[in-house]
Image 1: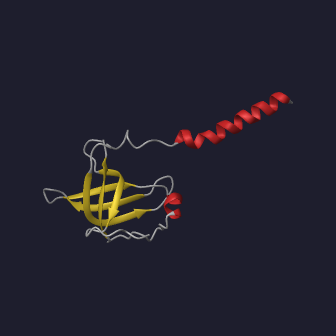
Image 2 (image 1 turned 90 degrees about the vertical axis):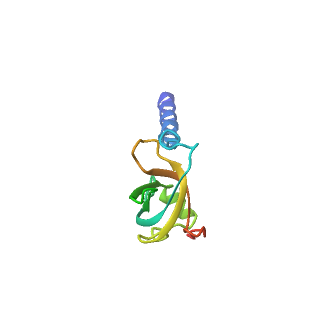
Image 3 (image 1 turned 120 degrees about the horizontal axis):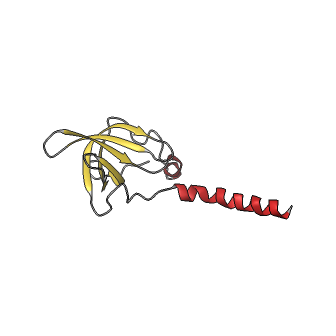
Length: 124
């Protein structure tokens, strides 16, 4: 009986640690030493767990449209700060400044500060 209790306790500890182990840092995927900026039109806002995503079309230096994918926090965490799926809508103009993706040839960003193009905050 005592062995069963020890096994159950060990299993409980492993189960409680799983979410901590499963979460990853952003540094392997995004470069924390660099900053990129995108000012453009929101095409889609996906408000979900484990990460929300914001898709923005913004002109590049050459005038060609860049399709940015901005990784955000979990919907459950964002909702605690007042965010909803309607906080940002397709067609909204935004400015995003954040860490660029390390994957060559991609236009991803995380840890972004989001504002309106004039610098005013996005109010959830």
